[in-house]
Length: 474
Image 1: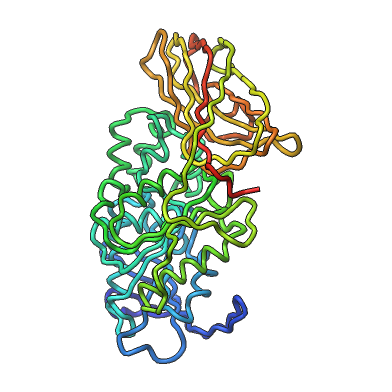
Image 2: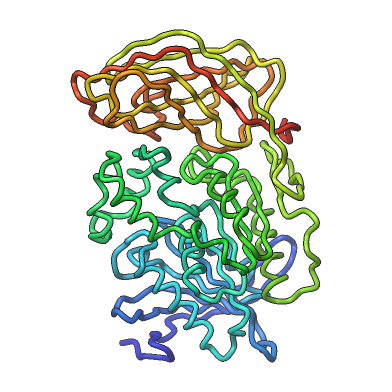
């Protein structure tokens, strides 16, 4: 049996001293496995790492680590161990994950209440400085960090990695759900651990239906509309090529934040990227420096360049900017005409690019279309084929055309990413009802049913592609 301890916290199960050698330095800390008891009776598995030795007079500065959807606190062990010689670090299994009870509502009000309770429990400990508690979250965890911040959890400083600021615009841009991404995210959690609030909107989210309900559900889990009131120091880490939570999510947040802020655009992310990426050591070091400055009050001067962008491939050094780098537009015409039913596609290819370009921003496709028979969506996939090497999926996007018929000029805003397109590449634009039409392995927009009589006729298309004025990748 476990006995109660402190603020509704169950006793320490394991305590041990672990020696870790990282980046050429020896670190020693004590690890405590805990169970935290929430006010609704749900237990959360947690681990507390604390530096060896006596705490400073004001207590240890502390960081809470929040993992991603379908993961567990073990996913962030390597970060906890890297920082535990300076900070007390608390990681925990989110509700419905790992060793925690309860159900997953994807950063709903109950998870944000858990996040507040975890902060307050840590602040109540005698060895912790209650005025120096930060939060680091990835994906789902990053969404919880930002949402808890705008709901008043008094974090001293935060950092987020590959997450959203507006969940609706991230997963249903132009009212068309990234059905494959949504299916993949929800499939990472066993059906038995999904909250009824998630099950209630799951099918609508896949099929882009009942959009007002989806907007309200997503708004409760988003932070963007309230970030202009935030003065807490925030460091945003976002992936160059993340087709789930793209660069626009971090750029929009960065523009609104009123306090100290930094933005790192790196070689990691959700598909087609991975986390950790090749620049993970830099990401972890940047986070440690950020928290050292704001929590440990180390004499680290403010950076001259608040925006850092890693090249692809990663070569060990990021490029530094005082503001988001300037871009220019490359315009490409895709002449031709296509007409096809629900499972057909149109494909247009350009001439070769005369120079290398690096995308930075949301490309736009404009195409004249005639819709009939209940045609409900149009998806665009832009690919590049270098003279040598594999085809590159540059970006994707789609628009909901439910209720439309007859002739229209459609504009599709593509995912905002940073992708290098080598000189001499040709560009191919694939237009269809799903992304699998470009490649069966491209599952971002699924091949969902279309009415039997649905048909679309497409005229000439134009691509406006934002690219860096000066590419940073080679």
